[in-house]
Length: 421
Length: 144
Image 1 (tube, rainbow over the protein chains, first blue to last red):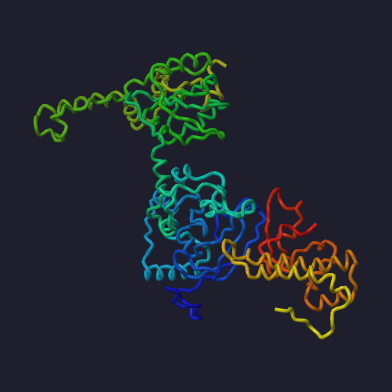
Image 2: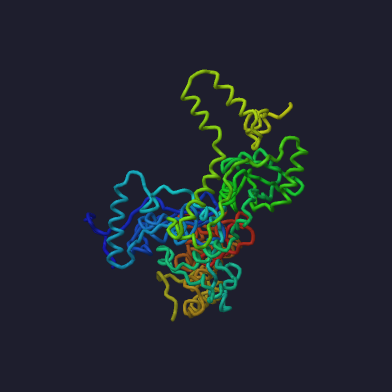
């Protein structure tokens, strides 16, 4: 419903006046020198139908003149560019951004509700000292990798091209060379991308471009975890001019690294963790996302026997890396109870089973703490220094299972200290 | 319909020599005024008017200033009868405006950013191969 320019601005849906448009970089174009025309109340907002200040400019040579299509209130509500209605941060459709960040602001679309909503939104925004994003966007969010991947890195100026010359399509364009419209084949009308609606795009509903982007994202290859549970090695590809130190620096956050081997000839590297879950965590976090030194690295699971032998061989050649014995006494994998015991948590079905289960658990838990309880007992019971030597001597006889246990190694990495040097 | 004359003095001496040409041009103008608008852009319908107007004034200007074949009396008579556009001819006397297409194209108030029309940009300064037909009079470049 159109309204006239009122003098009473309290609690009314007003015409909008603005100083400067809210635009994205692509819409502004490649030329840093832009002449922009401002027309107060030049058009109705395509969403809320209020007259607002339109800005019109040329985004570059051979581009059509662009103008702001929606008012500033509507663009601030959804954090989109006033002309292209794509997100200001990522340049993605509203639907994509909302799905990725799981934003469920529901903005009224019906006539009166919409007017009421914009009226209140505008009043709120006018009161704020520092502009805040509206609604759920204001929550601090971790950077979404979906959006980072889908977002374009460079401005896409093809959007600013002139429209297709409809006379040319009919074969009747008399302007020829000087025709400013594009003389190209029009897009296929069956293509779902050609039925786009500004309202749908704004509210993030039924947007064919968004659907296409999301389906393309879903089809990207996902990482599968290998069934062999003892594999803790990751294969890293596209390793060009990267050294072991850089890989260590990155992968140590996921867990203790057992070994890192770089194979420059095949531009790959193998990172072996001590714990399986550390390796899984590393794989999950870095798959398709790892970029070191500007190079995107491919991450896959390593194949068990081959690389361990290869890693060992090459490691001995390098002079320090060596395979360590597995730590004794770690809890072994407890076998699953038989099927009739699976739901039997209290051992109600038979009396013999509790003893069996308890004994295996006890036996598996016994080995690891041989030393700590006696030590604690010693320290608390007496303060004589005579009790110091036993713990030290017992430590010396411990075999080395991890690089950090190697007493001759000083520092966190091999580079800092080497055995026998 | 006989053309109206301003004032009651008869035309000066050389009038009979230039009258046929002027009649032709005026006939062309009448045709252009009556031409149908089909198949033309809205602005394009006015272009022939501006072109013929330019032509008429040009003829007069050429005769008097360039070839000097008519007397000042006759020239002033033609200007008074609105056969040639006085203001347009005044522009043609200025350096750089010798081939000016029409007076609209140098009017800054007609443009969005208070500049002259695109047809006033010399072809060297305009990017390569760009064909312009200015929206006011259909001119393809009238400077230089």
